[in-house]
Image (cartoon, rainbow, N blue to C red):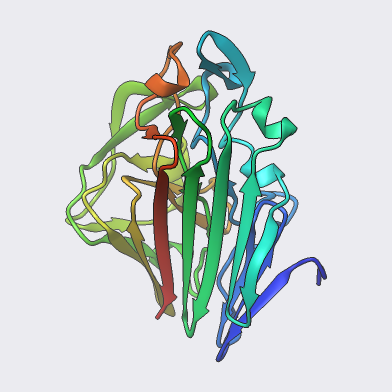
Length: 288
């Protein structure tokens, strides 16, 4: 086991957090491992933090006040080492602030804090973004955890998502380069239920923009994962065909529209904080 991980415990539950990227790297409840572990084949991440953008930028660059900055998929937070600012047996808070490396990609002073709190069979993740500069600051924040699929045993095809509210049965078609096109494609929802299979992800992720739900359940024959979110308008469901994981991602922003050439302030769904302003975003996960 990597000794760099921070171990949280609460009863029969355990979580592992890495200061590298403030990434959630392990979660077990009653001995059942729930988080995806990279296997060197399908996906080399577990639960990256997305900041200051979610999704792709066109050409992997962002434009601010006429200047161009190299800002790629999901931003830079996942590649930065966070500082541990508080820690207990069942919780930890990690912080990232601007540096020469971040300012070269995103010209704004900021503080990003990510808090993990374990309580029995539930784990809560909170992101707090602060604008510590003297000018408005655009940002997006997201959580990208991958869970084992099958979740706790059984057949992959016996799993489904059940949304709290009826969702539009259409999602954007993802254009080359990860950009969001104006076209949409159907999603085979049955009421609030979506049966899971590999074919769903043959044309990239399912991006439920401005989702009606504030929660959902990932259900299988041997367990159910309950997910509830606050401060996230978008839900993204992603896997790779044949891969044994399912990502349930909450985003405040999303990828650039196809052909977008605007300023970062004009990128759709960005949050703009005034000087001294802060944004708070929270997701709770519970294995039932």
